[in-house]
Length: 108
Length: 115
Image 1: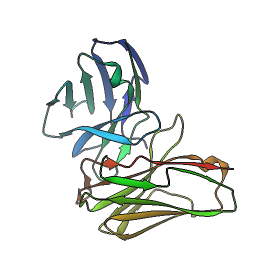
Image 2: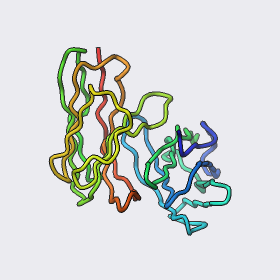
Image 3: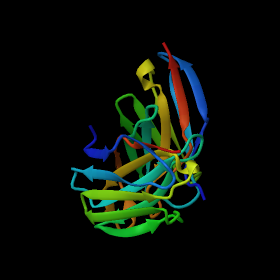
Image 4: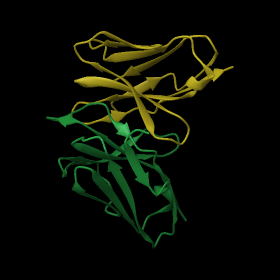
């Protein structure tokens, strides 16, 4: 069964706004990872948060993890047109699984 | 560049052909993965190799045959494919310890079209 599921499936915002994407998962995890994919290209790793961490920052990215709710969120602040891409969460314990992704469009 | 290369980048093959996809990682990782990405479907994990040993095979049809001669190289041999096998095939590598995978580094993918 699918482990990570992103929500929403699509998001369109104006440049400069913040974008929030959510991920839910079903079973225990050791860590949760977020990736970005530009159209037709390979995925690029953005950030990894361990199960004993609640929040992590990397530049304009902020990831939170709530293991009691089995959910994570990715916040991109002050979005740019170059952030337009699909974003995926993945769980990395035993069986690595990805969701269908959130397609983010940032309008200049 | 992520340190993971894939060749070829594009491949068109007939249903009776035999071809191979190649992946190479220069990152010193101990695990390598094959994924299939089709439109509007989640990324599907096909195979996992850890220290050259296959540790996962997610019910992949036998027309896909992986080979991992060493920790840096991974192949996917293809034969008698179907049109529904047309997809983007992605290779990735990572460190993997006791079943836990860490950051995965992906290659650019091979866009496969089966005619």
